[in-house]
Length: 283
Image (cartoon, rainbow, N blue to C red; front, side):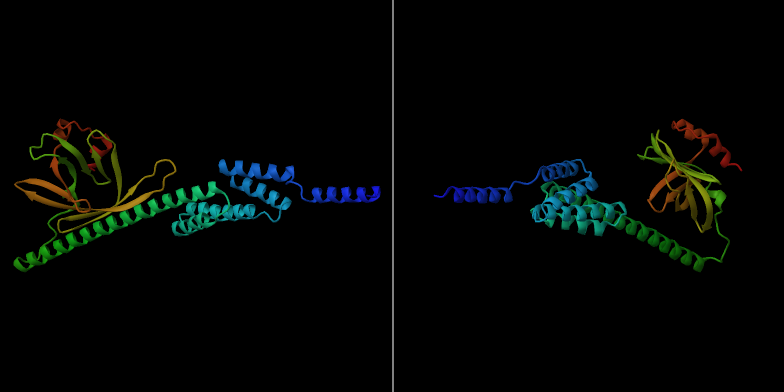
């Protein structure tokens, strides 16, 4: 064989091998850094790294899938932060449906779907409970209204039997009929209401407005926030009954009954009342 021809053949194969070279170091470094960023949940850094890798290997389908996963998964996270649960759930599912990408992102999308579904389920439970309580209040108000109508048919119309001052006082809830132990206390003053468990912190409600209809006291209240918490507003509906000179109140929303007690009886049951609440009973 001619020597010159042999040199040409060698040169040809050399060029062919160089054209099929392995991915560059920049590509490998970008992919490695991208994977590490996903593992540490630094998704913006991961996106930048994989975009650099795609510049080196534009036809790399796996890198394309990973970038698609990152976009959808980060969208799910942002929707969850905005409390857009349905949108977050949809995006999380889309992340899991993208195959041949990052297995880590597939696994995280499954965990995110589970978390979002638990939140949705809890919201449904809370909604059902809220509707149940609303229905109970409505039924009790209707029953009270019906009782009032029947009473009006038997007697002549008269002024409302109770005023706000009739509700003011200390009230105890008992965990047994023998009343050896009071597990809760409630106080109704002119400016504040409190409800608390035995030897626990009290919930303090500031009275904003009130009205009395028949034997039901309705109080609009404010709970002052702690730290960065938002102010909380709400309404109490409390009914008052008297038997054998003993008063008792029922919180209509919860159905819990408390019995009126003197200040001395409250102390005997091992409760302490703050001075400003005592003064609130006697404006």
